[in-house]
Image (cartoon, rainbow, N blue to C red; front, side, top):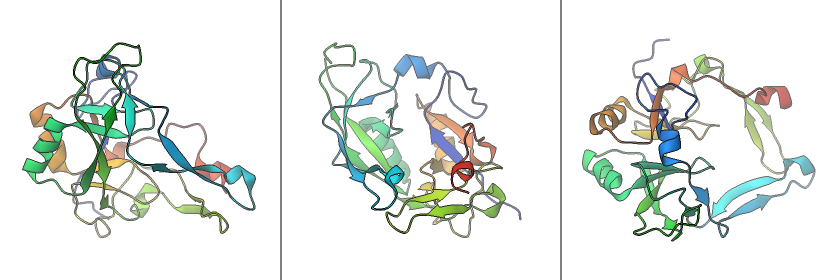
Length: 223
């Protein structure tokens, strides 16, 4: 089957990766990664049958973060892979008319992780993706491999051939996710905008070129 559109994963840049489309590995060390403050809490899910299914659920409330330093990029990422954007970027995205996202306010701790006081804490927003891409196209090799009837744990297999979006299931949003994965996927329009504006501290990878890097695949644990 032919795929009409090209989609991209929007992510944090890492110092040990190269980004042919967009992104600088040096941004990883230049801007660092933000941490959750101690007061951030999450739900805990307990399985009544399988103790090993205990896991964290949804986060409770909005984010409070500690920045690694006073220097921030247009994007800020946390160790939990939350995507934060500055007030400027939010306004740019809204002016561009991008769809498939909303934002939540973020509280910034007055000191950095190294204890230095922030002269003027930035205004940051958590980018919350609302667009939906449905199930990935079968070309991706992603399939449902396990569902726990007692606690609702769901596991999907790894992607073998990158992630191909099923354009019949995609809702047309500029920002979206596919079933089973929380990767932020964006359209060509968003990709071109980010490159043209030179937005910092982000990377763009064609979704069909994504590579599974973990040594353990979900299907090896949940056959």
